[in-house]
Amino acid sequence: MNFIAWMIVACEIGFWIVIILGLFTRYVLKKNKLGLFFLALTPIIDLILLIITAADLYRGATATAAHAIAAVYIGVSIVFGKSMIRWADERFRYYVIKEGPKPIKLYGIEYSKHYLKGWGKNVLSYLIGAGILAGVIFLINDPSRTEALLRVLQIWTFVLGIDFIISISYFVWPRKKGV
Image (tube, rainbow, N blue to C red; front, side, top):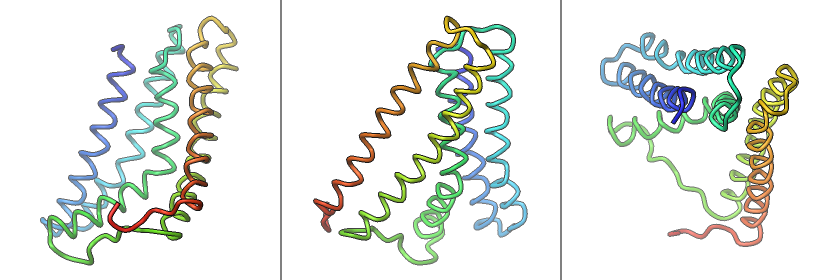
């Protein structure tokens, strides 16, 4: 794995560490403001990854799939970050602190609508990540150095299409209870 790939892994680990620290501080130590501070660090992790990736490319590195995945990570983190924190918060409260309602599982049309909304968020994260990739491709202006970025963008576009088909399939074959 190259340096950027390791940075993506480090940022993902850092993302979950600050979330766990934030939830632990908020609910176990009962320090709400400090807990919110830790949770607010998540966008800083995205910024760090963006700076490191941009600096690597600026110094003349040939873009790799890892550089492209950094853009994907940033787009997904920006769009899904708040809902991932909410998801972790609900489960931490219920399963660790033993407070609050049990997280509900969705079935039928409610699940179908929820999944389609998730697909809409995927589109938004795609637009952000693809915008970053397109901007980098434009700024570098050297197809031999940005070929990997374009390849990941093509794969991501294909995956987004498959996710749309899956989203629609839940309206045709709704998720049943117990599955």
